[in-house]
Image (cartoon, rainbow, N blue to C red):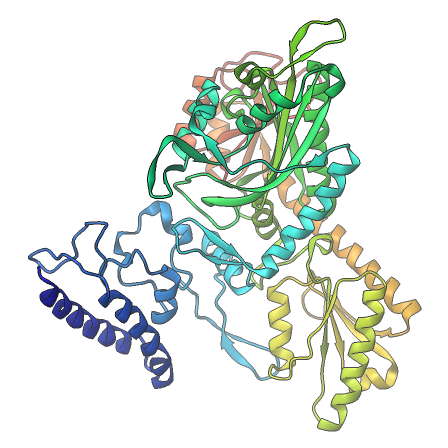
Length: 600
């Protein structure tokens, strides 16, 4: 088709798009705002030549671009234009459901908002559709948005604030245990990945490769970092010469890329943030001690900071990290009773050291291969916090990881009351901040107090502090706990005096932290059932619970259970009963106890 025909076709499609946009909204104001933006897309499309098939549908030639081949248009842009899933998304695969249009499947049930306020809630109840509830919470609490590349996400400031809390605590603990931060390149020669056989086999399906750079085809493909064991060993082989160089204890904060087919924000995305520790030791015993030490650090964080009760244990052979001798894990139960692997620590033995020639001169004067570990926790933990504690009203953040621990909402009706109320709010904010509380004063006059209550509840702020004219006169405030709705969570007449206010707020924050952990622990314990046969296991898994039973069968048997029930061995818990159990598959005595569950 010539350029004239193409332009005519584009003009026709532009007209179609304008008609589609007109039907997408019933409000002229929205339409007026939408069309100029749509026109920008149309103008951009008109600059590109396209080839069209005789039936009028867009050619699949990747070099062409038109309105019907919008690969160059970020999907969320058209989503925001139309207020629904883009019309060109009809080919979205099931694998992409979790990162589909943010506007899809929104619940529009009417609920009361504050005093006399009514507006549509956009959060699907957990009991109705847990997956959609999770996506709704992420959107409404402003934690993340959808990147233009399928399976990617943009972490918004509030979501990143939770990650910073995770990052800050872990970084301090890593340094307390003798580790230093470093950084390794994101691009890894493909030959490095091939050096460790089980490593390349385990990661090949998830690799993102760079084959062209600077307009030229590369002599060797580059892998976009899926993990750094290979790159780290390349450098360790140069840095480690003698036993005096050991142990070498490093950590890096980085992004990694894994081409996941089924994606879910924070839990599983093409690119995510994490920390990965890498250590080298002179003995197998030291490496094992290190691997166990770091999985304990992860347990500490999960339980004490994220209020997430996790079970610590060893992975089965089939679930062990590619290239590792043993993998240790922390497993948490989410609100839908699925398991989440929230952090792992690997004893790598000498596998990577032998592949890369990472040796040292021992005290005895012999050349020895080092013994290694690697361990990591990622932004997946943010998803774990949401799914462990959230409710139908929104997030419920444990105070230890909440970006805002207390929000102050000033309330007044008359103009002459405003100044005194705002000043009291500012004074309370200053006192609490000086006392070490992460506090925010919401002095936005464009929003009503009722709107603010709902907004900050959605964001999971642990404590709301209300200050009205009467409170100013009484030199007191009202405290409302996020974990206890209604009057049960309200406390009236708390003095604004610094000596009273700071201890009371801190004590309430500690109480909320403990209450969330206790609630999540009780939920987990009520949903784990002991089993002694495969029939029992199938029944328990079908009920959505975790099954706990003896296991001494083969990897093939484990694979069969996964195929038939979709459940996997989450771990062999460190806490084992004396004498073991009877294997639920083979009937053998003295088997280790394993936990089976469906997982993310």
